[in-house]
Amino acid sequence: MTRREIYEQLLHEIPLLIGAEGKYAADLIGKMALFSAAVKRRFPDLIFIGFYIVKDQYLHIGPYQGDIIACTPIAFGSGVCGKAAADRETLIVNDVCDFPGYIACDSETRSEIVLPVVQEEELIAVLDIDSGKPGRFDDLDQHYLELLLKIVFDNSTS
Ligand code: SME
Image (cartoon, rainbow, N blue to C red):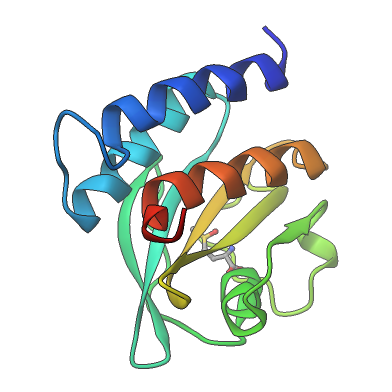
């Protein structure tokens, strides 16, 4: 399957599992846990996928999948996660060695995508995904992941 096909499958699957109509009626932490598990299951090559939750201008580790110990807390503006949170913009880093201030939680990660999670116009978290392959993430990932995050976490505005 291509990456696009996998994302199309996730677009169908994730709302059924954890969207507004999700059969488990998960709370926020539950949605983050199920989201991480659902995406990791379809992309087993990922090293880490998980959420950092915003609290008092810091990002605190939330539910995640991956065999690493996540760095926490992360200040707004620090590392890839902190910069994406401060700018409220998706950030794709093709080679983490080139990112000034990159926070290394493991020695395998080579590329990373971080997306803001917004609910009712408020930044509540960021989604962080790491890969061991340089340049693993592009516009296609950004498009589908932003869509999935909107469906799951900001369906109040749709
Ligand atoms: N590399 C991230 C820190 C989080 S870990 O990758 C799980 C960063 O620079 O913000």
